[in-house]
Length: 130
Image 1: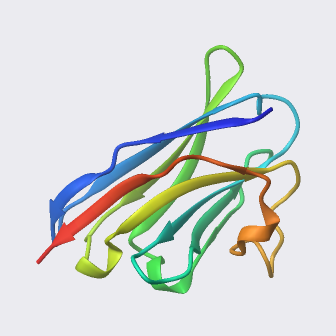
Image 2 (image 1 turned 90 degrees about the vertical axis):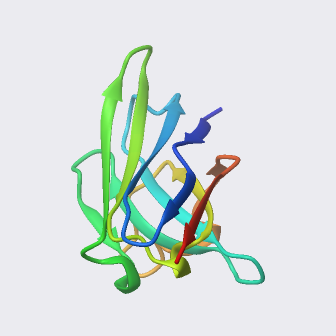
Image 3 (image 1 turned 120 degrees about the horizontal axis):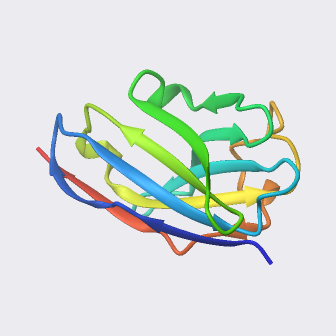
């Protein structure tokens, strides 16, 4: 069973930066689509970035291109660490951020949809003040 644990959220002022991390266990072998989603109060959960763990290809939502960077690296004990580097934070980035994974490649047209993922973390809160 894949397990995902996020960390790195916090409260920052607009214009600041954060790096979110997601420790992923039992994903060392094979290729996974690993993604970051976010959900603001009263809004649907939306995919913001995805990466194929096998070849490193990335995908981004238009709303975050140029400010968000997704990456993944191998860690000890057959784990991977998924990162989301966020620059130039805006109040509208305020949301709970979730890590998600699925045992296949990131699909071009549907990587940003929740139903594509079988595994989810518990989320980490990001709050941006103006």
